[in-house]
Image (cartoon, rainbow, N blue to C red; front, side):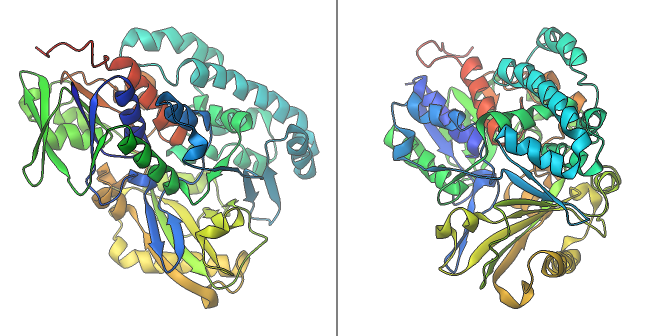
Length: 496
């Protein structure tokens, strides 16, 4: 059988492994860490379960079809739980907006905040649907590896005003600043600055409207465990605690990978779910790559990072929704500090995740588990997190205690955190970027890392750094691109 190695086991890597099995390959997944999942790993402590990374599951058909592809029933592996509201957005003036899937309720919630914006939202939603029909339905799972592929969609992008930023396009329809924030924050979920990122990412809004927002019972990592069970059952080899440090290339063709303990794994196809900057620069000799030379890799700009505090409480907070966005006093100014100035702001906007609102199994009886996430600059900022992390976390806890979680500090039961160093060291992401390269106009579609390497035959890339980008639907769609560009095992000839 032809051998395929998948390097890294984020959702993109796991989905690629499924699709490679379906194409007839003998598949080996090699993971550097002690658990699968990449950013979707898990922290367990004192009876609490904390998802380390993604918590928002949308477009569940992308997950279901992977199990069905190997003739398995998804319901035998995991349980999907709908979330309502999708998000509660709480503004600085203490008003709030519940973003829900039901259109009647959604319109009513808009009317409560700003009656004059109801008609504007309806027009915005139609525009978002049109962007979705092009940017997602037609393009999300198609390879962008030629200039022609980009030129074909350029007229549609111009017609849909994708030269505008998400925030700018939302602002043409919505006048209330609170609702402008509510309908433009979602690009932060894929690492983009809403005031700069192309409005093609407004498709996220319609994607959520179309398929809803869900949670996996037991946490997102329960889905990782389901994939592991599926892959092993179908014959894939899963290897953990084995970082790959070199790719064996001969005559421009991938031949295998070498791990840090000098184990050698031959392969005909290598699909990398790792950061392409580090793969090209650190694992492949200069002489074997011309398109991705060191100086070109330095030109890439990278997404922001995250500071995330995980905590369990001895008391419950039933008024907090599953997904709560807590807006600070500034929006555009805060984004500028994080993305452009790369300084640690004195204020913050936060995402508060409360999974026990949906799934009581995530915490011991009578207790709650949370994580609170603050977007922060990546490590190009030179922030000294060794000295700043405790101060910053304490500031967040004090703010939550005063405004949203009364008694929090006195009721902390479990408490730990991660900062950009975790993304740079543990997850091996360049500059500690939480979402890979930044999804700017000049780093989207054709301008992202290609799924099929231009330098090395048999080398492919999947995940947040490739088309269509970050987020669970994005990385699962990138695996569908892999399925299109990797030949079936039965068709593959010896690489020459």
